[in-house]
Image (cartoon, one colour):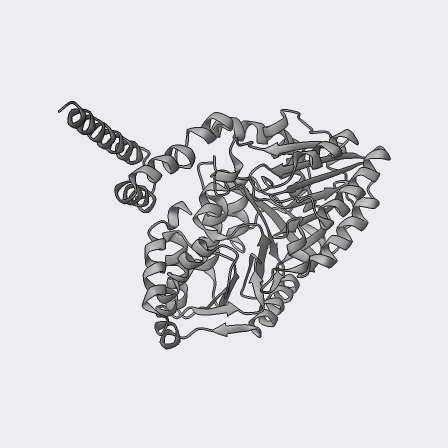
Length: 474
């Protein structure tokens, strides 16, 4: 009787705990999709669900480390010097997207930039090392992944050489993205005079590779005049690919005033972690002469702001596309707003194309991505699966007028949880260059048809549908 009593007591206590957690999930007032995903997980897998919710699901961790008001307040410090720069005036009647990003994100658009596009990591790393070796005042780097391998050590050696020459070098890496990297690798840099910070340190990295609120940005600023942004991290696989295929990515090098936007993003993130404020004008050097003709605007999004700036801008861009909208993304787990925008544009006669990898580096995320393809094709969206290897590129281009490259994936995590950065180009030449890249990749793709897609096995269909239920949590 005593054993039965205690067994019943613990069962009822556990049930009460689960129900209390469900109540907390409801009180969070998240999107209905995310709320239902958590409730389903807690109902069918209560023990793992409780662990995951209290470890990665609650929002108090981000509020404790970087409050919304605090992050907004600290961003204003480097913003002051940024806003002092002479930017292009908003012209809302001709470009509402540019004005939207200015008002909501504080992002300024600058003309006179020169842009180089890299689709292979080897050429990007070669140019990056060359720029680093020419640095005279400062080098700022921010990466989600910076590994201790052939590529990471090559970059480290170049940074050490510049630090010994008196150049200020600062590196911000994501603590989860680099959880496999021996901390001695970064300690050695610090011993050489390089300032190194980890973004939002975690205690159990082996269990938190998907933990919320990660810094997914890939930024480099050299002397405030040259910058890099895109989808490439610092790791060998970006150069040599995976065992089963190549690694296809997109990154850009920018010369000109648009680098001010990259600098502001870095200095804000650095201050959030280090509490050291750098706002001197030497980080925003005057650039009287134009380097090129490209108009560019650096836009950031984060997990603590009220608005989902990049996602909302993407929805606006899709809604305003007149002829075509092309997307490259490694993962496709869209929010309802993005999915509706794509379907609506296609139904209105816009040539909407989405390119995904045929095979990806993350099984669960990839299977979840595939569950959305039926709905896309039903609306007339053309879906391409890249065959040579893993497509990691995050590229958007539309109407031969505008384009964007950056770190933002087409998924809940990038739109709602990660710290991301994209550069938007308001330039016909850049749009045509990136459109040509899309077309070249399209030659190596499988164009899906509803009939072909319907032939896949029931096992795959069921797996995709089940994983989709958890899409808001992936």
